[in-house]
Image (cartoon, one colour):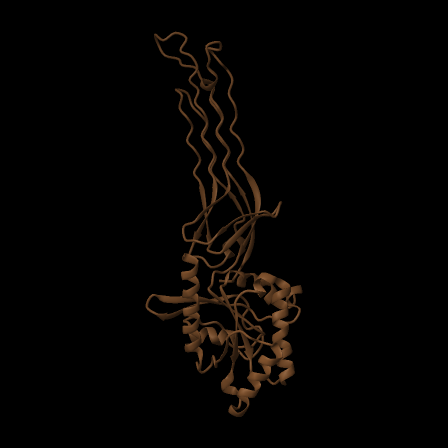
Length: 342
């Protein structure tokens, strides 16, 4: 199924039922009086989070959603039945905004979470409602109210603990295949990753985390160049970024450092908050670098970037160094989770 991470839909709550105009008509009961019931309220439109979806593709075909209207009131003071709520399933990580105002209505992040987006209208009053000591036979009723109606912008931001960042062909997809059961496409040309891929990394029983691989970034991504800008928002939910650098590319040290700085610059231009999040540097494809050059090449890059954070030297293709990195990530995430629970 094609990955779709944005959609526009129109939702409207159900209309309330009208109040009923009715008078009691029974044998041997003179002047029975009013007995018209109230109308039922209209149903709500509610978004429901589900783990069974990972794309907004279904909304390409169905874009208009209307909850059931309430039934009209009836005689004998019968209140009309309320309209059924309309439940719309959306993938976890869906951000919902009003297209007209830009206001963010909510964020669906948990299985079974309910987010009302359009309330149904109230039911109208039957003539029983207007009975009084001075008005024994009211002929007044009110119509049901219209439900809320609005256009919504849905935006999916994948939920992952770790996000992979880097140039096209930095080895992100290969790394994801090496540490998880995910099988993203891998090839020797740029932009083989066209949409985010998720992989669950299982360290041992009961200990796991989710990694997100997004399309590679290029210089100018923050202005829309390449594919990455469309998916940078998916990294906003991650706790940790892994910046992968291809150490075996046919570049001199200055070019490699410039490319790494460009990625960091695009990240900051897109979101200062995202740029300031925890980020580790992963020097990938070290198996393809001559042993005599590995230390010098790595040191030169770190010096050029003035890097003081964690650094890992791995080969995603052979798996060398990946296990140690995975264990360190798991430990770091558990420490963060423990701190947030306190």
